[in-house]
Every structure is written in structure tokens, then in C-alpha cells.
Length: 163
Image: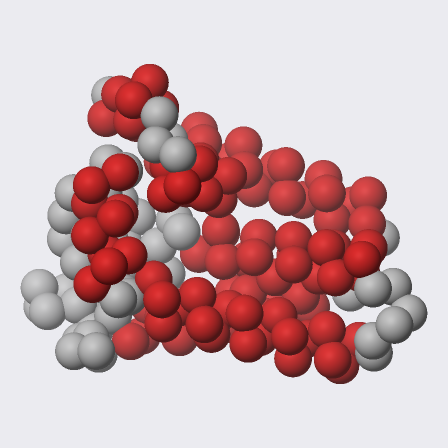
């Protein structure tokens, strides 16, 4: 897929916190790491609610790991990269580096780890808190990302652009 291993801008710090730059999605950590943590937490909640005893915890973890791996691949296809550029404020997005995709995947697994150790109400609280932190910090979140990729809303894009 032609992904680079690391940020080609010559910056070797492990993080990039400016989502409106070419460094975004090129380092180990960026603000979107929170949404990948939410993937693990949220997918665990969904599977635990839909299939509480039908499949083992191990099978749920494997299913979530496969879903996240598939998303990381899909997210870095030309089709989805173009969709981000057309429908969101991510005009400078050109895909994740391999290091960033790996970190995103591990953040999802960390979300699963936490979800298995706290009850569902606490998990929902963490999800809401992470959404609010993301909205305040970068004017984006997992929920906003899903909305903008599926049914873009001009008012949201305008609000995000004002940052």
C-alpha cells in the first residue's frame, strides 16, 4: 500500500498533537489515538452486550483485533483517504505511517484491556469523557468522524475549520 514507516518530515519525536499538519498520523501518538482506544472499549461493550455468554472473552478479543486490523488497512486505502479529504477537514491527510497504524492498533487493544477490568457503566463514562476531551482538544472525535465519513454535515465541518 506504499505506507511510510515514519514521518518523512524528519521529526523523530514520538507524538504529533497538531491535527492540521502533515505530521498528523505519522508519529506513534496523535490525538486520534484516543479514538482507537475508544474502538477497543466500544467494540468490547457491543460484543459483551450482544453476545454476553455465547462466545468466550478470547473470541471477543480476537474478533475486535480482526475488526481493528481490517479498519487500519481500509483507513489507508486510496478510497478512504480520498473520502477523508472530501468529507472532513482533514485536507492534508495522506494516510497513516506504519508506526502510527501499529500504535493505533495497540491503543485499541488497550481499550479492550480496560473494558474487561471495569463495569459497563464505567466504560460508557470513559467513552463519553474521551469524546468530550477530543471535541474540546481537536474539534473531532470518534462519533464526529463516523458522522463526517458517512453523512457529512457542513455545519460540523465549518465548526471544525474554525479552530
